[in-house]
Length: 224
Ligand code: DC
Image (cartoon, rainbow, N blue to C red):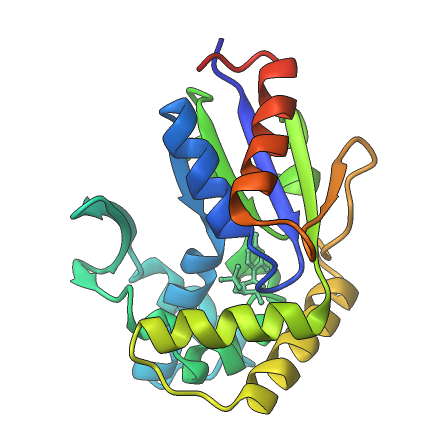
């Protein structure tokens, strides 16, 4: 049986690492919902769309096409046929993505596409509202959390590995600010689904958290 696995939690607490690991082990699709909000944000910034103007946002959304392709084994984000995988991870986009993702018309458009990706089940999707709004019927919902300093250091390393130089304190400030906006917004705030299992990975290695999550997935009906 193919199931849906929702992975939600704060910024940079290892959601994508866990979701990609699960997808690989189970031969499932991986859905990076954050990349979609990042791609929309990049479009708004590059095309000078004032995201406080609802008409401008609605018109711009019609011109945005987001696709994922696998390139050299990596999930890669395309915005209107341009590879934007690297650009959507920069601080420039990180600084605007939380306000952009509070906009209900943006959320509606993204959620619709995400639900289409999960129509056949067999998907692991990470984000903020996957277990609560996108796939409320997911067989497994994981809510990930970790200490903020540990999250900042992981993010710093991840950016450095991509050749992006960012200040540790700026990263921490951005993470906490995004947590605040994501958790307090009116439309689909980040919150733990009632039926989610919580994993605090502060003291867990990537392998340990994957092993734990895989066990939950097999218990909920996934097959290796
Ligand atoms: O997972 P990420 O850090 O790449 O996500 C970037 C931003 O997108 C995050 O600050 C909040 C928003 N987001 C969201 O509102 N809902 C989702 N399902 C995924 C991301």
